Image (cartoon, rainbow over all chains, first blue to last red; front, side, top):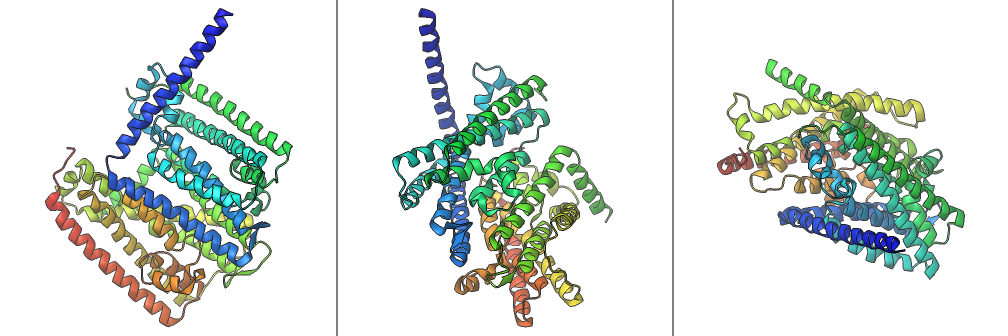
Amino acid sequence: MAKRIKALYSRRTMIIKYIHTWYLMSVNSFSSMMVSRLGGFLFIVGKSLRFFFFLFFLLLITQKSQTIAGYTQNQAILFFLTFNLIDTTSQFFFREVYRFRHLVVSGNLDLVLVKPISPLFRSLLGGADIFDLFMLIPFIIATFIVAQRQNPDIFHIALFIFLILSGLGIAMAFHIIVLALGILTTEIDHAVMIYRDVTSMGRIPIDVYKEPVRGFLTFIIPVGIMMTTPTKALMGLVSAEGVIFAVSVSFISLMISILCWKYALLSYTSASS
Amino acid sequence: MKTFQRIIKNTVSEYTVYRLNFILWRFRMLLRLLILFFLWQAIYGSQNFIFGYGKSQMLTYILLSQIVTTFIFSTKTQELGDLIHQGNLSNHLIKPLNIFHFLLARDVADKALNILFSIIEIALIIVIFRPPIMLTSDISTLLLFFIAVIMGIGMYFMVSIVLSLMSFWTQESWAHRFLFFVISDFLAGGLFPLDILPQPVFRILSLLPFPYMLYFPLKVYLGNQTSGEIIQGFIISLIWVGIFYAGFKILWQKGLKLYTAEGR
């Protein structure tokens, strides 16, 4: 019994340690990003414009046809906002992945591996992006306002949030696989941008696409589960089986990604330290 | 001439150093083309006519826009920004070779590779998906299209140089380029033909340089423009090329006076 309590206590201490470490790394990352305030301002303007441009395009196409794959203009906007919510949140947390290649080719990954902290944690979450945090706040507000028009009840709202977290789990799995690929091949940039390009197909409901594209986006690269399923849950369009399937895909993706990461670490030979 | 040939050869060789990087790069280009293609196929659904464009016209526009994008937007000139920040510009300044000629030669290599593989990728899509596309054999249309593309290439080359030269004044070389990418991605007409926008918006856009980088050459190819519109388009393109050339000259002269080879 005493051993069990001790184990629980040390696990709790470990979690607090990792949260504190993440906070410190994020503060460092924010500080370095804010060195160039003009650059920061331009990034925020660029991200905002990118959002408004596609929103304008969405309004344009739904104005003509009134619906898209049977969804109204308001629903289409909700799909787009949910995509932005998930995409921006994953970029906020996992921005360090974009800088991982330099760690590998310079040999500095060795310095990460010798530290008393999980290298996966450091490589995945070591550099939160403050500009994405600035973008996240208006996205959350806009999603709340647009979602209210669907008159969801508490259960569907809870399901929506739960499936967003599940979608973030799939996003995490993709990023871990990209890290593993980075160790094995030193190729990161195109791999992560391929992930971004494919997930961008979730800006509109994937029901719009014909088969086999729709099947590909549901079962092979589960963009549909990440981006479309949460919004459909908010509208009450997802069954219990659909929720279980989404969560299962998220769990299995994470398991596979961690196996890939472990395999990559075993294969790591340190480029040039 | 031999120098430029050597630069072009070296640039092509650089791409083949990291083969997986090269393969993933081409896969990504193919994916982007497919994403746009599927998006517009989905938007059209069972309809044949939207925004004044038939399905074949729109799909032709989208597929051709990807080839023309590789002509116009592929560039190596962003390296100039890094050369300035790292102080490595000095190496180029002391050489008996104009750095802009050097960058132009690298651009030629980059564009040649992009075009070669884009044609293969588009051909694959045509063979597999058999989209209804329009092919023109009218010599005058093709000639005007070619001239419009060349002007677009010249315009973007100048713009990219100007963006890189801002590195003389800022520590940041990527932020303003990112902003430009976002704006040009939408306003150049890569996602949709710009004339589907409300007329007042389109008229304002027609005065900006962005439509002449991509939208204008594609409209010339589709044969939807009157002679007056084509002449107006070429005149506005020339004016913008001139403005960007003047901007490049001024920024280069002023920037060199500030340059201290910081980082060397």
